[in-house]
Image (cartoon, rainbow, N blue to C red):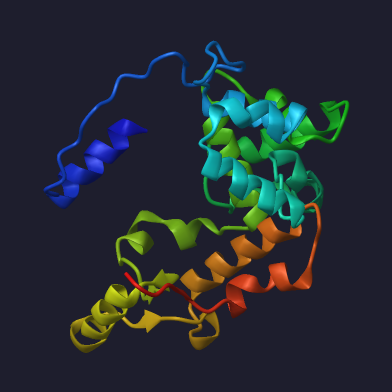
Length: 243
């Protein structure tokens, strides 16, 4: 992944100077902690799934643990890949190979491999499906991206390089401080892209993808709520004062 960041910096002729930091005490994909205070993200997610918040507390900043506790108490988490199993399998079971082949990142005949993998599963789980699909050619990460595009029904043409090369059609404001508010006024006067503060204020395919993704995520939360399903559409920017 770091290589792609470097390629992007080069293409953009960016002034950002990349710096590498040596990883210590935990490998990128370690399944369990090897240290009392440092663990890979993979190990943290597994601990959280199997043992709850208490099991990951030694590996998280206190502020992060507090946020997770608040979100879990509100029914907004945890959300894992298995939280999306039902809607994902719904898509896979209904779609023809041709329909799957039209989805972004379903390439090189993977639509047929997907259809052949389904009857071989002992349980309809995302983990089991990934195990059936994984080969030396197709990495776990590549397959996860593909399943995500299937879940969200991303047409290949919507994310084609020539489409993405056109750039964004708008700038969406998620939050701002008092200083940021002054900057936003300047951008409105001199910027070339519209500033969007409410999703209801614009109809655009890029925004539709954004809203749909947020709704699918909210639908997978342990406590499904209409307000969460529609939050991306209704939520105004968050404003903080005194900065």
